Image (cartoon, rainbow, N blue to C red; front, side, top):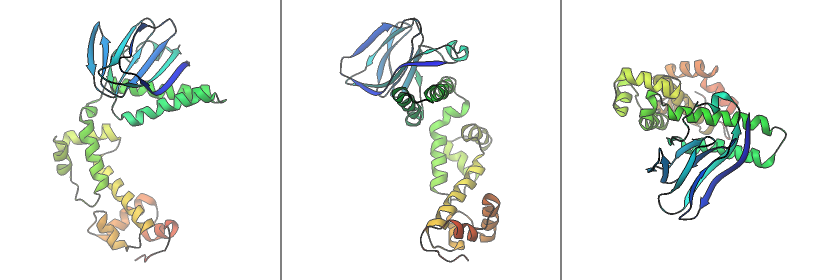
Length: 262
């Protein structure tokens, strides 16, 4: 079980602020730093980049300060009696770079809210949220192969959804990430939990549904904007994906004035 002692989000500490202490028994603390921060590790102070996180266990020395200016950080002090988390599922006292920082921070915000409002479901919600945070810390600390290409894979995924009309091939996608097609197939599945070819289909179906709902373009025009040169092939794939034809989907979902369903 996790017991939250304090939870603060995006706290601003003035220039010159420095923490240098040892936590008492029963006090763990985890932190997320928004700016460059000097952190003591193994007796040495070193600079760590923005979006670095760290977890301390009772008895560890906690020593940090902003490299310059205001220190902005989010922190949670807690007690924990769960062996999986209390005995080293994550490395204690070791700075960890937290990618997807803004998304990760949402869980910390929710812990702070639950701890503030003290609703009947507080214990259950905090337990689940803290588990998520620890699992993410574990993944950050022990990254998979795909995480080494995190930025490149994120960029590829964004391009796929921004341009579903492109003639996406494995070769073109692998070239964007600058790896082989075989390696891309493995890394992308690890990263997105579906194949890159399936991602292209998802992007096209997402664009198609949006155009069917929000425009009066005909089915042939929509199929071309979604990367299909054959409208019959588009209609078959759309029905396989959604269970209904493009025309029927439009009749069920279109916003505002209905257009032609040819």
